[in-house]
Image (cartoon, rainbow, N blue to C red; front, side, top):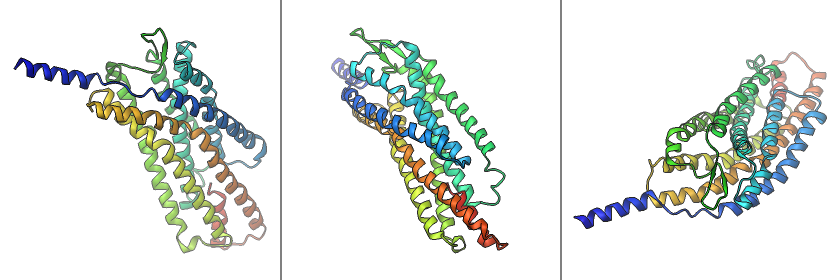
Length: 339
């Protein structure tokens, strides 16, 4: 009996204190974050210049995209600090900058998700309900929606970054930034944050993106949506939807799904060294993919901006020969608001 108790205690100890095997994450983070910084900075600065200086005709869609650019740039500018930390495995910049960089990470990720969702919903309204959505799809309303998104995202990201002691001293006298939280911290605070951001910041937007895209595709298949130049526009819209959904799913699904399991492991709901090893191995890879959204967002801008400009030109040409045939009028209007 004593031997059995001893073995049980040993097994419990091994389950509770599993060895970490994720040291590969530091060189991986250093390389990926450096690439994201360079590519993301160049492409998003270029996008901001285009939206503010080159694109003369703006609508509600460009309002969402400009806010997405701001979100990306704020995060990209913190990446050099993160790269230094991953190389040195020491954070010498103080607790405030650690908290700020963490807050901007979550602001960017879930801000990107929500702004991409706004673009998807806007496209849905423009194509599926082009006439009924006229009063809703205005630049003023778009600005109100963007303000609401910022409030929602900051209400989740700022407490995550600033309410916890984000820096802690390690055994080798180095400072860790937003790492190695205890199980108690996960159970008392971080698990609640994960539930909030996963529900509001990921699950609901994912459903909206999929449903809106499916309904747009269903609408485009109807014969009555065909008019002059309709086939060309359908191809552009289809390509835009594929790019949009591909970027959304590729960047955000791996991280957010793994974050749920990571939270379950850290709160001891999901136990076992095998599960913890898998989750800890996948987490850095999923995080790098999520961070790369800063580089992929400009692809959305490219396809959307191309559609906006071509649609505006087409509307201007058709307005010259406008008649009272409502069928002829509807398609240019839909095309103008497809992005």
